[in-house]
Length: 607
Image (cartoon, rainbow, N blue to C red; front, side, top):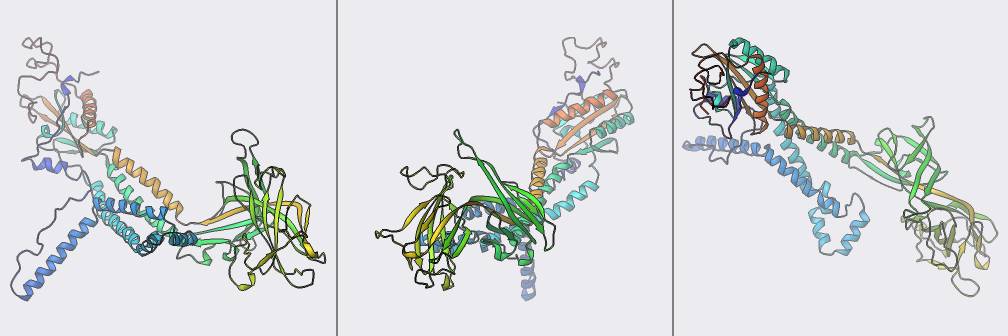
């Protein structure tokens, strides 16, 4: 190993650039950030007399202020402020019910808050993401980012095509500095420096009597990637909101679904979404499988939750089999089919007074708790005639428990979500169900306003609990209802189409990469000057300059100096060199590498 004690790196916390324009040039363009401009005075300057002078002055003033406002809008400070405002503005959209998500909750909020409801409505807080103020922030942020990125991109491209600036006249003024004397020729030192800097991935070239090198372009590249990624994410989110669709469908085992608007139980979509944007496919639910923990603290927790389906794409597509699980959707084109819920659909048979079957179907009931205690309504709207042969309608309030605790052991609440001891409790009504009025009804609720309850022979309200295979007879010969042994299960699916999600994910990943590059990569420049001193000995000077102060810059310069020093070691046979151990005049108490009382090498500054 060569002795590098005479190449100690000196670091300064400040850099005096007074009177050295080449040093100012060397530190310039380490960043593509635009220069900050203070609040302007009058852009119009002196105003000439007359109408023409006033007109010219006004045009200059308007142009100047417009440019100033544009520079402020496209500054990084304003972009970050708008991004913060956008995040802040999205908070009400998460805390306050939104019309695009649940209109009923919005109406309930208005009824419950007579003061806040109208105020929120005027402020657009019930439709935050389509409100004027949120759209204004969104558009301003978009314009700010584009206006910030475009000029910085061209400037960055210019820097990539340019050359590292020439070495300053006095390298000692730079924050990190090293020097030594060597017997090697200046050309040999410069060649060694070019090779060493090239191996360290510096972009290096020979400029006069020095080698100029630069590294850390990925910092600015990462900065630009971060801001471009933000634009991509904004576009992707906007595109996804405008063209998205999100619909829900409950399907009983054995039934199917076709992806059309009329098939959904409920659907929400963006303002630019049309029927033609729906992916053409259909599927049938063949079987639902659910298993649960039987013991331990997690008793009742699902272990298996999956739906076996067959699907086809297009009108004449070939049928394929698939299994849909929680968080493992079925992907068909741009659509994803998620499994979101599950319940039971008891099969019931209703007969009229003559024993004719007027209703036979699996009736899905909605769960109320984790053990799948379920309730709903059974509606017999057509084909039923009472004991007198008159047309009538039947309605049943139904409560179903898959695992009943047993008679006298509590109310109708399930003890376990599996079908261990299924029981169906019914209350019977007859009259007008209200379905002929043309108004929409909830299929899981029974409107009893125009209905009468059946009563038994004692005058008590007719109600009963049925086991599979049992029948409840309606009084007066009005028919019966049978709880069949066939109990089916249903699955709730959510079909989502949200274009741009892949772009949004890619933009997010690119933004993380760009931010990491801009934070952890330092832009720096290094110069190596080799000149012949007055005594004919080559003087080597190395200096470094970074975009910002960093403790790693002197350390890196020291590593580079050591590598160059290996190729051009310190001169050791000079009798006038106080560091030479063979020098009879050397101070024996002076440590090797200590500052010499003699003047420093040419071009260096005494430290």
